[in-house]
Image 1 (cartoon, helix red, strand yellow):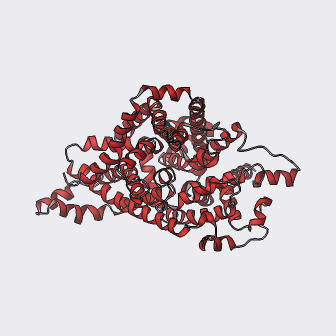
Image 2: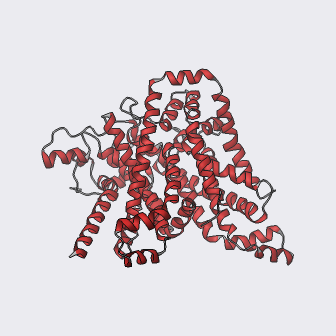
Image 3: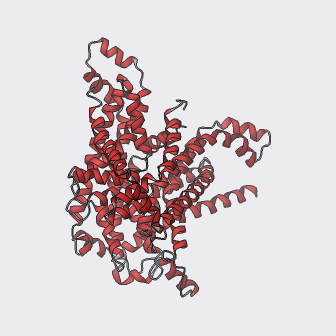
Length: 278
Length: 268
């Protein structure tokens, strides 16, 4: 009898968790499947489900979506470039600070950690000013460089922790055998760091794809805008076609969700390793 | 050293120089006079304070409880956890805009359902009443950040040895006693670290407010993170910088504490 009550209690918690977690996402999906005329009726269940919205979005048949494919292309270019740049920068830095223990490593790690901890929204305005001085505003490069600067600190920090755990004898043995530093990096270090590097590459990719604030500050109304900014344009009018917004929003959300779940095991351990280390 | 050059360059050009530019702009005293004279700034400062205190503590307490639920070793609970992290895995824009559309007082599904199910003609003005809109922004923030902190505390809980709980069970300890004398002492430090980090991130949370309420109605739900950007949009970059610098005395101590906790002792 006690077990029965205990299980019902757990089931009740589970139901609350499912409703709380899924309702906004369910609502998003329902609206994306609802025709325009049903949109304002407020149904919980789609009355006349249709894929027409997806056709409208894919064929860019609405003012707000006139550049849907261009925007998605920009998002993709930005996310992939940020991911690659962050990986290169963070791996080199982690190697130098953790394996070579270059002078100034501690100071650099301190600055990196400080950059990671200062809320990105507070760096956004000085960054915006600097980008305008550099003449980079309204270019993809502005967003790419800004997001690389924001993604690198955490990436470096995670990779440094991972490489601190590798035995030092490995490098020493290789150096005794006559390997150059560059060979140690390429032939010994990189293969051993593959798992955390995957986590970091995905982290930077998702951070850049999902970013909104920097994207719209640095790329307002221009050919360089990513899809996140394109979606924000719907907010400009009160009578926006919300079902089309939800449809394009769903298309925008699916790639990062799929990637997150595919690499969930890497991500969870990597990200929590960062936060948990108390 | 060549290996460090790429990051040193990125850090210098895109972090250090902007920060110096920011302080340069922030040196002029009269922008602070102008900032303090703006009634929206007072509202935003008060809102930021409430927003951070309420969202962070609510999130962490719920995460602490839920991490206990998810630490139960049952297969279906493991599957539920996979579903539960969806708000964290999904990008903010579509999900927060989904909240915005659903909470629309006239056309949103919630008030439509209140009418269809209960005949309530005028449902609550979820986003057009300032207080209600602010509560909704806090709820959206909790919705988005809860999975991450639950997962973090869950990792901490799973690191506690099961033998301790078994020994306690043999001695006839209650659930509360197990929490009080085993779980909490092991988790307290992680809980505090998480709370500080969560406070820093919540201070900088732009999306939940901007995408849900846009700071409205009538700038009543602005926080510092959104107000700064609003100044920039109105071509008042100097006021935007001032609104950030004026918050530094609160942010910096948190950042310093956090840096000590994260880079200090190496115990795992």
